[in-house]
Length: 118
Image: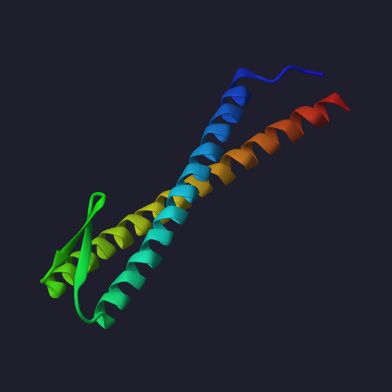
């Protein structure tokens, strides 16, 4: 069997790195989407809440009189999360395109080297 060219070895290494980056981005995106759903439920429950309302500050729950201010904070955090998720979507798309391009290049190179042996 012929040895793999240094260029092809480099492309395989890049392919593996892109694959790992893609997995990391996917994991982060899933985590952010989960946080977003949780925050949406929190905003919904806050609008229904009657009586005392508490907000989390670090590991403490603090009573707050400003329910609208808290809702505003939550909605701002929700917007920030949505922006970050869209950014992750773009990053995921770019990585996926690079992944598919490298995969195609590697497959072509391996196919050519395989056909030369026949």
